[in-house]
Image (cartoon, rainbow, N blue to C red; front, side, top):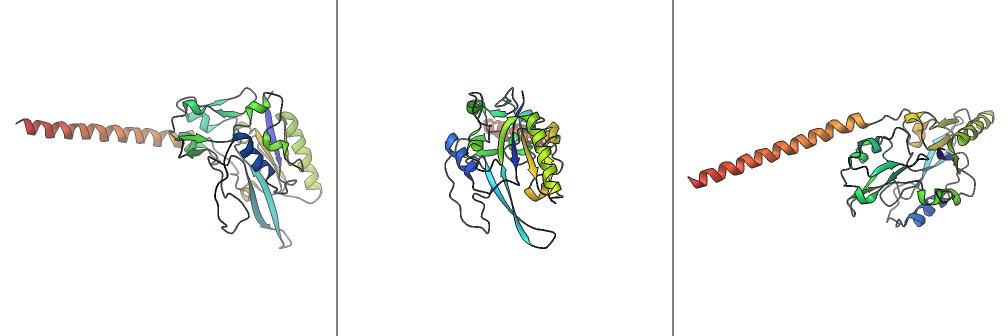
Length: 252
């Protein structure tokens, strides 16, 4: 049965417990950062940071400023561009929905980095391979929740069967709208044929840095990849011809 994480942004208090738990469980180190006008730390997902809490400052209808928070990570798309473009099979899907990554056969081509419509997959300069959230398969397949979910003090993160979480999310959206949160909506039910990280949002997706209509990005990756390969072949042939030409003159 398909599993998922439900992120209820209306319950997130930005404690970043999920962010820390992810690093601890997967052995990711802290990254040196500096203040750049935001409370976010770090400012983006990376090879070392697989889950990150975003801080968004918005203005309400009354003109007053307010905070929106979102715990974000890989969406584990049903139509996963990263998986489709991977030439080695390093990216693969677990039977319960997670898009996992086998580091042993990743060749560092970075096609998945270019293909991801959410900008999630990150290249690790040290290892020459890519990294991203893999949804804690070692924990899930042992009957445990992902590390990030276990630390959430407000139940902003919930893990379980995807269909049940969809029903829960729809009820929550209805509750928020009844309380005057007219922008409340569910994100992830149908995007890219369904995400395995669902979101209850209080405002439109763009406010949280999520594309309104994420696209299956393979079409834009393969042409550039083919062009790159052809350019390399042409350069190689040209160099070979030039070398042989110089060698022929020397023999005369």
